[in-house]
Amino acid sequence: MTVATPAAEIDKISALTGWPSKRNVFGVGVTPTTYAEATTVILAAARGNESALVSCYSTHSLVEASGNAKLKQAANRFDMITPDGQPVRWALNILHGTRLTDRVYGPELTLWLCRQATRQSVSIYLYGSTATVIQALTLALEKKFPGLIIAGAESPPFRELTAEEDQKTVARINASGAGIVFIGLGCPKQDFFAYEHRDKIRAVQICVGAAFDFHAGTQKMAPAWMQKRGLEWLFRLSQEPRRLWRRYFVTNTIYLLKLAWAWVRR
Image (cartoon, rainbow, N blue to C red):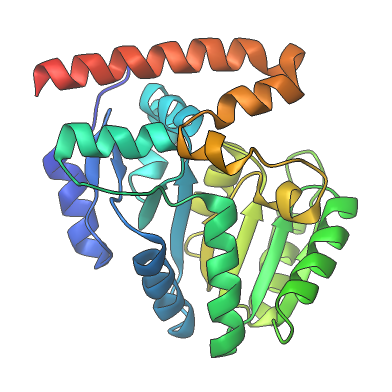
């Protein structure tokens, strides 16, 4: 049985981290933030060699975390959960009056961070996806941000790492000196990886999901007008209907029911 995390507990966790405070959305602490604020605090933590956790939550991620006790516990220990999906931003505005005018989308936040990392000489590490995607992503980022220091890039095996492999992965990342580690393993795998390595990896770990594929050019991004109206799910469904129809039908329905219930209780 899943027990929702009280708003007071979420606020307590946020206060302990010193990061922008979170708001309770379906029992998950989500940060009402902006690209500018998120970029500023992440780069400050990276320059200070802090071990910190950030994830960008779409509607699917939020619904998954709200119904999975293990994932919810992990998510509520992250220093920042950005409203990656427009419906997540809407929920923050409706339930907490945050007046956010835009979401903080993982792929876009990745570009903001890379731009500032280049200017501030903060190195980054890319971890996730396939070898082909990682190679294309590395080339794309180096072309877009001349001077960006990519301290390392690797695609892990599509299985659980052995203890020895895990130790070597941590050693490689720490030896690279990277201040930011971008993780593209998909939800919830990427969130569990970051959470389990919080006290091992000396950098800010950021779970950005499909950002790797989008910037590598292996997947198409939804048109801006669809993104703005919260219809990105529809675009992705049109690209992969057989794989995604069940996920979006179930996820969107649960989201609407949870939002309605939270609004009534409010």
